[in-house]
Length: 376
Image (cartoon, helix red, strand yellow):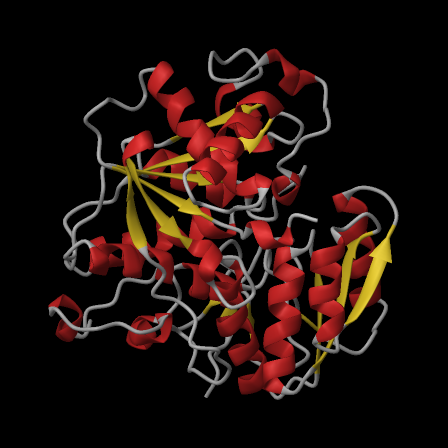
């Protein structure tokens, strides 16, 4: 049976159904009532500690609150040395639709199938929309994907060619979400498969931590540097590393170090204030940014992101365009053909070292989140 949902703030329980709300009436994001991402589990399968091949992220199904229904054999992304950065890169851009968002799409659409959903609705700057649309097609479900009017043509085509209906919205990324929510709240047929709000998506992004620990012989690095827009990978990583530590599979949680663009840095402001040494003055005046995939002014789970940073001993900084563009060129010349947003985390490694937050000998992992094949 599909797990019910619960509000962690007011304890209201919502029955699992195609008509379940996308958030609690008190405004808080919902979680799974049983087997939720942060719930301690005593009976963890001990086979997770054994050396064995892991061909996709569903190898960790025993740690997920959703059963496998919709899959393209996603996951098991490579972990490679990146000596020019004195770090390791996890190549999240080799997923079926070209971004880490497939982690959440496979679990979200699997949840939709469990509930008997016939149509899904999502809003996205591009990558999440392409992922949800593709996995909806795999599941045989209809999908409406709300995107910015200036979405990259490659991402728009990815949505259209799998049979989903793109709804292009003029204005900011926030305007896209507003238009999508108006459609959901006006009773338009469809289940809100939100990568920002739906707990099923975070069940999928948790597997980033599981895979990384398994690839390292069930150890964790000193730090993981990740981009933050809505923070779906960041928060998923924290939940996954927390689950591994709570169950005794690993001994620690790595420091989680986030990075935002100066044009959209709400978490940075929240953590350190606008006078922080780690925040360029440009954060005071929004500007265009090459990291278009993380232009989120109000993350859906901002409180949880701040809690994850503080609990892991992490931090967050904001970067302007120049270091991102420099890092992007360096990545391409090194054979990592990623989209601009993917360059912000490698760029942040250098900034964190200059700030003294990362040391030269620290063991660092950086996910490269999206493929350069979707640049244009």
